[in-house]
Image 1 (cartoon, helix red, strand yellow):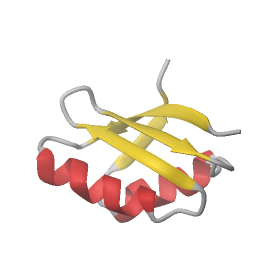
Image 2 (cartoon, one colour):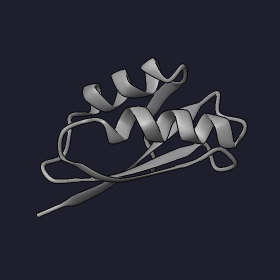
Image 3 (cartoon, rainbow, N blue to C red):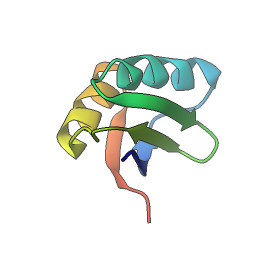
Image 4 (tube, rainbow, N blue to C red):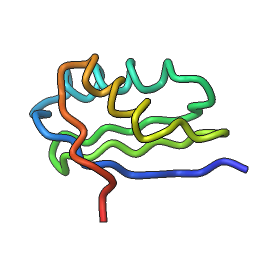
Length: 72
């Protein structure tokens, strides 16, 4: 069963930022969909099985941004 989690990300400001995060996070095993939203400062990840928060944070960091945590 797939799960969807939304995270807060700092540092995104444009479509290029969104694409960079989309590319890194979508490369994680099990990820089926990624939607980064620079205006909202979020990234929504759908996966089966779900990667750990640490894996998501590492992918976001690799893209050059900072994962703040899960969105409320």
